[in-house]
Image 1 (cartoon, helix red, strand yellow):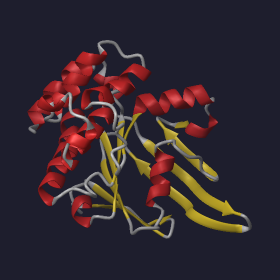
Image 2 (spheres, one colour; image 1 turned 90 degrees about the horizontal axis):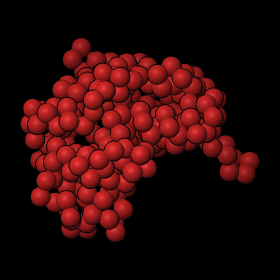
Image 3 (cartoon, helix red, strand yellow; image 1 turned 60 degrees about the vertical axis):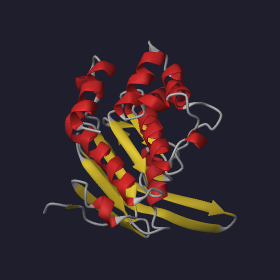
Image 4 (cartoon, rainbow, N blue to C red; image 1 turned 180 degrees about the vertical axis):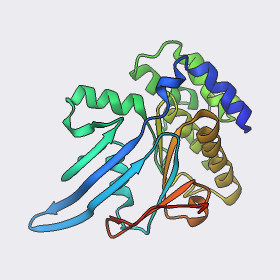
Length: 248
């Protein structure tokens, strides 16, 4: 998949790209504590992170380090025990529920390690779903163009079980891009893929970042994948260590 192909496709998908892209994420003094009876587990402890418009950031850490908790908070899927998660300078948790849901839907695209595809729907129908939920026009045409942009023009009618792991990852990517988000969050996007397919998915993320100005945040335990990002942030025992540039 070439950068030109992705860029060309994006021009057809949004007539307001300049306003849809370029959102920033801010994590401010965030704690996340899970309670089970009298036992408390501190998953995040005073985390601070600023992700600027157009950055490609990798968050790395071992299993149990707090990566999944941070990902869930950034995606607006859970609430911090203390602190703030901001999108475009707006505190997610301070917004009314409907406004919060709309902000998550319109500004953040999310891909999960599991793919999160509905097994009884075709690739096309899976991509159509977020477009229908957000009331976008030309649902079928937009979904077809998204799948074509990730190299799946010939697999529109295939269900997830009929697709390879790499193809499922591409469908999930198309779904995440459906509402023209400003930020793309990817949880272990290459975790279950072979080396060649993983490189292809990572190349797509790089192209989206460079050619479309999409802010990309990848959560991973894979140092080779993280090395492809512009900046690496390490999380250890729920604490974020000083950030560094890969190229520094």
